[in-house]
View 1: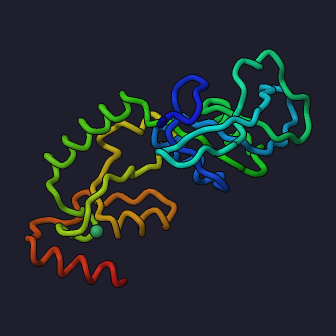
View 2 (view 1 turned 180 degrees about the vertical axis):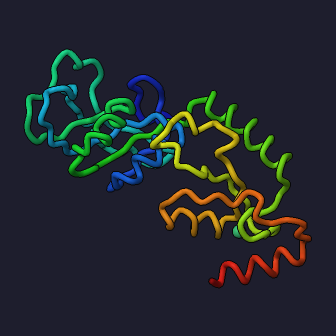
Length: 208
Ligand SMILES: [Zn+2]
């Protein structure tokens, strides 16, 4: 049995001890998420959702007992204060922007929405056809290549599927750019680079 539990759709992974950043990442990547967390609220707007202990089987391992949210208790909302509750994707996005999540416990995640995959596959294909299989920062053609959002789309969702906001980076440059925490555009940086020069340059740039 691969589905842990179904609220609106089946979940296929459960992670424990996640951070707020992990949860944000799942949401950014189009996953449907249910999180057990502690929230501190000043306005009574988050739904009251009870939980229960259920037994589940995961990939043939012995049955385990774990806590899951109960369906349809949404007519109630929490008063103000601090509570432990389960929140779904949309509520979570709101709670994240309200900064009211104090602590994350367990997270259940489904596969990303099918249209996200379809759109993303089409976009990345177009991008590689346009720019080639080369890192736009360092010219690396050997390391795994990844697609980077120049401006993080979480602050501006309309930029998520905008090809003009995408660039190709190797895995090393992508990690480096993420650490800079700002939008850096490397399109058009490498002009007339050939493969061997590019890889020499790649090493030099990464050693910076
Ligand atoms: Zn690179």
